[in-house]
Length: 365
Image 1 (cartoon, rainbow, N blue to C red):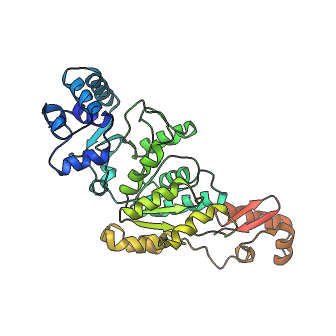
Image 2 (image 1 turned 120 degrees about the vertical axis):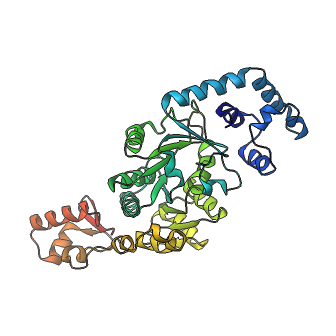
Image 3 (image 1 turned 180 degrees about the horizontal axis):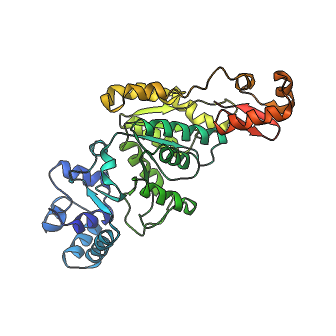
């Protein structure tokens, strides 16, 4: 068994990224070999700064000390380290061209190898987007899929919460070290994910701050772990589109939820659909698409229950259009007293079928 400090040190080497290290591994050079073979770094033509760092590790210098400290911290916190040669390293993630050579996991590492769907979208999502992300995550988690996302505000948060509400499992793939939570407002959610049998996952060592460049790089892990990625509301240049396009490059399924042509947060999803993403309206559509890949892991009963279709027998819901209507106009259309209508609207809002904004009512489901 290799020394975890060597894998940690390899992940910290300056000037050599996961893509190069993954290629070396394919060529028969495992990252720990760089520290055990004194002439290997020079023979491979690695940069002087890389060779200097390797020499520092061998002589007990700064890199060795840092790797040792991080290994002790992981042990003390109960974190799991999954290196690229570990039997527990997820096979799907190994298949991308630049898999992280080391994953830090706070929670259940076995979840990383289970079938999962990424749910991503805007940090500034609408109420409808939040509702849809939560509903899809709830249905799919109830069907046995692990839901993964990035712990950001908006759609990510709704996806994690939806999975937890279903009693399912969720993974948060973060762009910081495990000792930090970004955004800080989701610290409680991160704890709920761990307590609910999920996990926080990062390729970044403890101490890593939420730098802007970390998150696009993190996105390849979100898509790489997943059999498919669902995008719920995304601006034309959002990070969610980066995740979706990485999923396409990785040969994974991409699903997009359409929206109003007047909503700027629908434009990213519409662009993905034009590029070949599968348009979905219910979680059953996703289950149907994934069934050939996952077989018996998705029982037929789940597909039948996850249609997400509201009852058409509700006269109030049937009278609410998808364009805003005033309370007074709706009351007149239904010939209901205001108090009666208000009670029905509160029920439909709680069930996620309508959105109330002041005196305007809009059907969203």
